Structure formats: C-alpha cells, structure tokens
Image (cartoon, rainbow, N blue to C red; front, side, top):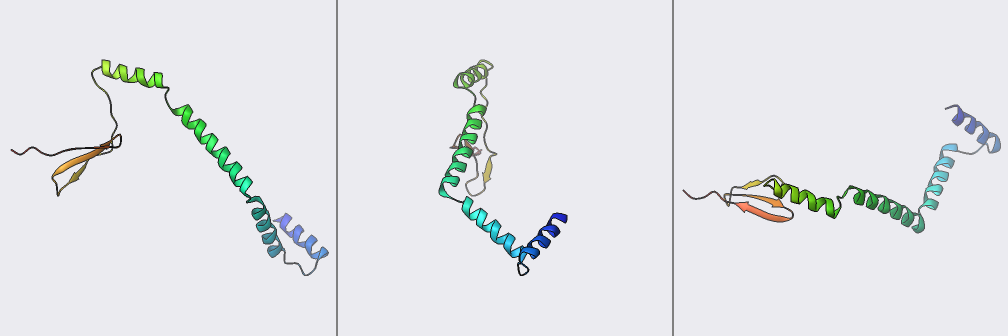
Length: 111
C-alpha cells in the first residue's frame, strides 16, 4: 500500500494530470500483448508438451515389466482387467460395460 501511495505521489509530481490506475492498466496490457507472440506460445507449448511426455514415459511400465506382470498373474491363475462399472439397460434387459475400448455385455438367461 505504501508503495502505491509513493508511486501515485511521484507520478503526480512528474505529471499532475496523470491517472495512475489507467496508466498501470495500459502498461500491463501492453506487456501482456507484447508477450503473446507466436514464438512465445510455441515455446511454452513445446516446453509443456515435453514435460508431460517425459512424465508419461516415466510413469509407464516398461514392456518387459508389463510382460512379467502378466505372466505372474497368469501363473496365479488369474489376469486382472480393469473396467468401467456396468450399466443396466432396461429396454434390452442387459448389462453392458467397456473393457479396453471394447463393449461387453450379458443378458439374464431365460428360465
């Protein structure tokens, strides 16, 4: 707050007719617009993309680790598959879910 009062006083001494609020907004807008160049946007997008890509690669299991995990699961007699919750479709009387992008379903057997 003290800095703002001092800035207002200094600006008033240099130019008694200045509106410090308007001048500050114009300066901020000009700084923002000058920073929005195609090169700056491209640079920021590239840096962000590289950071995200590195993190994805770091989090993915290696092909070898994934293969051994599947072999271990198979050796225990089960393979774990994650899926979205099943949904009931009253009109068709069936349950459906998605597993790995494929649609799976079952209908109650007629008794």
